[in-house]
Amino acid sequence: MTRVPEAAGPLDWSLLSGAVPVTVAVVGAVALLLLCFSRHRGWWLRRAPLALLVAGALTWLVALVVDDWWQPFPEGLPSDSLLWIGVGILAVVLVLFRMPGLRWRERGGMVGCGALVLLLCASQLNVQFQEYPTLRAAPGPWQVKAGPLSAEDLARRPTVSVPDGRALSQVWKPPAGLPATGTLATTAIPGTVSHFAARDAHVYLPPAYQASPRPRLPVLVLLAGQPGSPDDWVDSGQLVTVLDGFAAAHQGLAPVVAVVDPLGSAFANTLCLDSRIAQAQTYLARDVPDWIGTHLQVAPGRGATAIGGLSFGGTCSLQLAVNAPDVYGSFLDISGQDEPTLGSRDKTVSKAFGGDAAAFAKVNPLDVMAHRSFPHTAGAIVSGASDSIYTPQQQRVLTACRQAGMDVTWRLLPGGHNWQVWRAGLEQELPWVAQHTGLTP
Image (cartoon, rainbow, N blue to C red):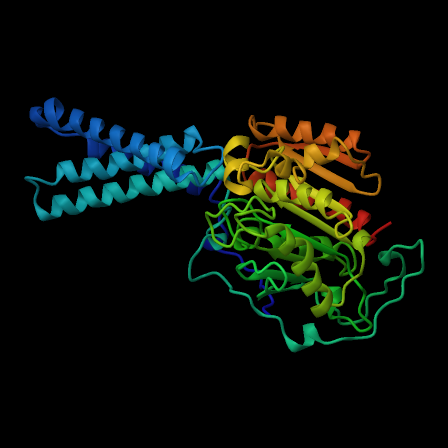
């Protein structure tokens, strides 16, 4: 188990606003101009137009391969992302076209300019998706890697009794010397029943989990997007900081959070269902809760267990709330879709269910809710105000949930389909999760 330290310095400077992205933008723009500029007339008449043509063709080819052949993203590459990918390709093409006839020192300068333009493109993509708020959150040797769960975490202790009708926070008295921060660990959660090959999960244990007697805390199973991995919530989502902040305001209490993997690999799309692709639903409905109940001392029952996620993970959280309501009593759907998809319903039904549309309808949340009510399920639905693709879908989900008798809330946050919304969504809905899982009244 690794306790995550706090630090301040250049690694914590914002990569999303302020001096760093502005400086990168200015320097990168100057570097692009230097790559384009030449005093030779032949450059402007022949090589520069050809470089633009080649870069445009390669950018079109990238879009064709990604959106029409590979299709790792059901909704396709965003146009803004494709623009910056195109600028990066143009920089590489310009460097290659400028090389002939240059001295070694000049070639080094061209390569340096190309690298600065690529840094500009990476910065703009990061600002677009809000993925790495600081350098500390980005992959690199500076990251603190979590270790395995310790024997102390897995050990059984006396527990705090909570009378019926009371919330845990109403009877909890933190002992002296309680740690100020929680701990983060990585662990394998095997697909014992589903045989699903998941990547390692992350488990956050709040400060109160270290106490004796130990409070039986509720559980939030958290899912990342697609493409993605459990690391995304830890790094880009700043999971530990968010949960430690909640715990600090609640005498060390917070949900136990298990960030698990329903994909198997970064670009896989299991649809979070049991289908020809994978038994992902069984993994989340059986294997994950069974492992948590066996290895951790947490509050039992559906009322103390929530599932949540972003984008694909948000869609998945709704799916599990509908298809496994005996396991998950509440869900947090951040920027999810109105149904699981491989790009279209026809393609989804064909590839995952062998063309059996009825089999898909039996597990598709909006189809299920059209014929079944869920009066004992609660949901929080969150979306970005400028997310023109997913917010309308979330509104359809909201309507369907209310018509099915669910107790659902709606929150619209500034931002698009990016981490600006997803981080804030988790942080702002944690009080809701705590209330609906019995942690707070």
